Image (cartoon, rainbow over all chains, first blue to last red; front, side, top):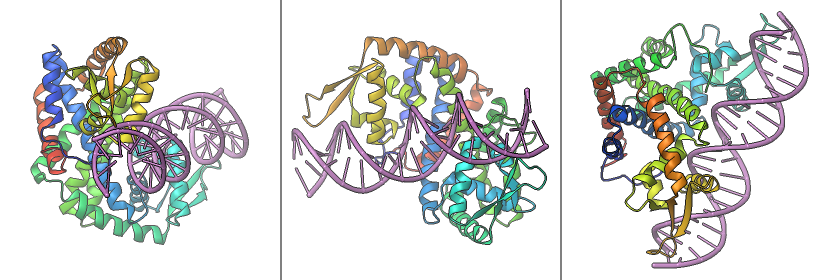
Length: 169
Length: 169
DNA sequence: TAAGATTGACTCTTCAATCTTC
DNA sequence: GAAGATTGAAGAGTCAATCTTA
């Protein structure tokens, strides 16, 4: 959790006002949007990590675990994991190291490529993923304070932004 | 930058489909929204840090510098900085350390509180902040790929989310 | 030569402990 | 004792270099 005290005003509205006051009106809304996304991410990540601490997971490792659990064979090449989650090869190695130490995942040589490694989710991994998801659904995903319609609009707007930034397609 | 390759499909839409297939429809849109925010933040942070590298700044330090430049006296207690940017005391210390090493900021004892320290922006700091903002406006804030109206909607939706999460008020 | 994965160095963030001053 | 700030240790991310296999 980054910082505790709740402010009595919206710091982003204040920053946008400053931006306009300095003659940067053309980029004021963009600045405001970027800062809003950064800040929302901080808050959500802190909340997610708090919920996941009980399962000795971080959000990054939770994402890996869910990706493996959704995969057809319960196993994926490490490179695929990085591609799907858009994380560094080094980060994938680190995440899989931790998950393996915790017994949630095992490494196997890739039978289709002698250079490659597969990460395979274990029975214990599936059990933990299930319980962690239950907690995440209840304490994070279903309690964001926005209506279903608002959530849909947020997703659609950010999809445009992500596509413009080259995230997919 | 986290991961390079662009996917041929939207991984978040895929995750939402999986969520519904597993009977978690009530939290599917929330999961989708949270993941969208996380991902958008990754992309934007990578882009911002890339632009700011030319000024030997990170986005975190850029935020500190702008906050100081907007302050009435060009100086703020470190605690205030942390409160406004919602970052840890330790992170503030680290950011100010770096900015001070770069000659963009100086530390002063707080005349109103013997325990406290003020961070004051230097002339060089103001110059760098100005050039960095010019670059950020052109290469990030004004080129997000969303219309002014869409940016406004994004800001409003995330403001609701941030307020519900206790960010302000 | 290129791709998959790992390692080490560096950065940033958080937490707990500490020091000084209120 | 509590608040402002700093320090050191641990977690996680990026980057560059390396090793193995295709």
